[in-house]
Image 1 (cartoon, rainbow, N blue to C red):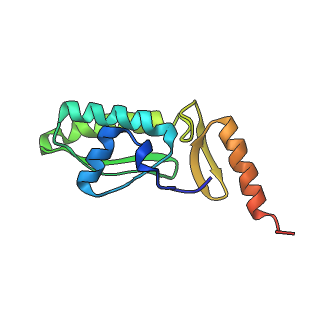
Image 2: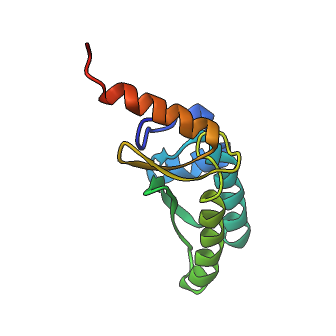
Image 3: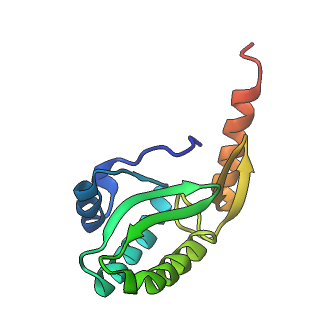
Length: 132
């Protein structure tokens, strides 16, 4: 598994792409979290259609959704919504979206289901073995 592989723009949820393009930043997380990210964007946009989105990433196996409301009065509600989404991401495989758990493989921390954890472990072992 590649750490923080930048996603293909075509695979991202449409409204999120538009919002990211407006701020000039990229999304860096696995496709398994895309539905969650799209749901989070919908919830924040319902609260504040003019919110700004700066970054979406995975850091230490956690979803980072760096957004700013257009009004400081919405900051606490924004934090609660983002916190709930981050908690949900911590239980879903970043690759496929199925139930998963935080795994550290070759120094990369991701949330993975059993299938993708096994694949990552196998890939990690191959990369650490001598090339002979």
